[in-house]
Image (tube, rainbow, N blue to C red; front, side, top):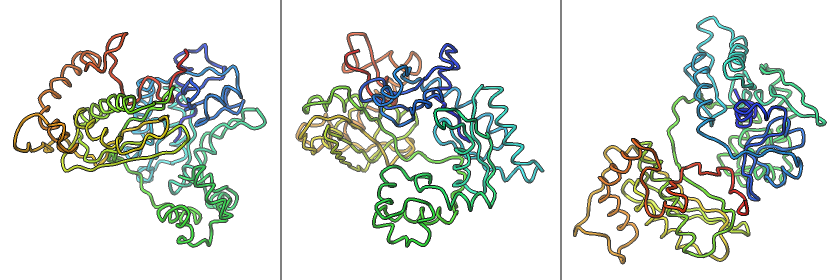
Length: 425
């Protein structure tokens, strides 16, 4: 089940004056990206993942809104409540898409197609949102069917979709014979280009190709998946409680960063975001990764794993600056990211102090300085988190979070989640 133009649809619902106009949610600046586009915008060729610059070129009257994840989260929770009323076995994919296991309906004597249509009507009546639903024997065909069920643009005209598409054996065979490889789950532009170089443009071209041969181009895991998909097989179950593997914060800058000081300042802000997100979820991380992308497109990453859990801003920053320091800043930095992985429950992840006690020295190794900050600031972290829980995120801040306009505590999504704002605006 996949909601239609979700972010843009919510914006139109909240501001009816936008109805019938080309609306997109995304970054408004030169480095922004479109995240969601209304069907009025899609008539001009605007689509998600497109640069905002190109989208405005295709549609000069395009209205680009920055995105409000708290509001989208409210609609998503209500969407999930409707799904849960049908079946408790469902797997969310982001805010606007779910896989549902309908096998329990058979034991109740209910018809899956009727249930899908009822769910779609409930969504329209209660939330005034539309969706495409695919009903099939596995995730592969259900995903393809949900896309086929949606409205589509042909020749600049909007054609309504069926809303619900059932995939029978005949449809399976036809799709496997006619679909391009780009339609398959997980095949993005880069993988599609690799397959095309091998002469593999359609799903049928994958039949009979040896997985080992594919693995040399796309890796063993993707190769095995593609071979299975080409045969119509997909054994992935609907997982109701998928553990979080990593979290992080990335920024694309309106003006690229030049020099170590600028990079360190951005890392300080990102360390605060990641640390707060970890503590909000009662998690700690054992591995930290810094990602750097330069203006020329070169991308470099550095990682370090430690033997203790991290959720302190200062501790994360110690390691992040050391990792970034190992990257040669040969040019301006367009994007910087800080990611935490190796996640564990916070309970029972205390850090043992090392003797002699005292503040970390500058000549200590970054891992030792991070250990000291993680161990010594537990009470301070708890006090800060309690103040923010009671009085709001911006009630208390570090000196680095003070601006000319007051306190500004960065969030994981950021003020401009789909790209930086125009620096001249």
